[in-house]
Image 1 (cartoon, rainbow, N blue to C red):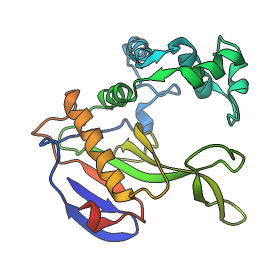
Image 2: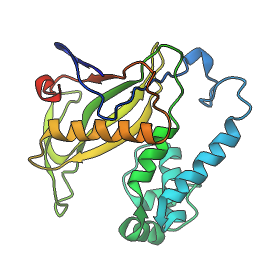
Image 3: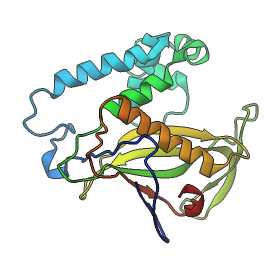
Image 4: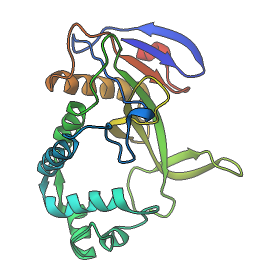
Length: 239
């Protein structure tokens, strides 16, 4: 597996922990219609229906409401600030009471959901490696005074950077060659206070590769996958 670091002149090679190789690609912008499906793909609606049914099965308690909330988040026209706002979106068929109850007492099989996402990444063109991008993303929560696990997060924004209480997340997505901005979300993990970013990143990568192998997306004969890291990661620790 090849590893590249943004702003760091390092290229390392490490053993594939799953014992397999992987490939992927993403359709370029010229191959996509406004809905994001491949032009001329008549099977896309049926695949979408099957995918939504599989996602619904990952919500193991209060699944209907959780699924409605997910739809509402995807279709909301602006930032989502509260579950109550989501409950008034047309895609959400439940009231705000059901929304809060689902978030408090609902259950999601996160392992199955990650495996499902791994199974639905775009297939690769012959000879191309599967590429992943990893970075940490801050989520500021300065008003959540009673939420456990907050730390100080670094926000880069217009008018100057800021440090606010919140959470850092390690995000991992699949990317493809070319100029397309489409990515395949694969995993997001919260970094608890004092967490070792290198250890968490290694576990995250191994988990995704194991999911790809388990779903048949990985093949031993495929080119070695390529990992792209933003500056700030420890290249020696990851190697």
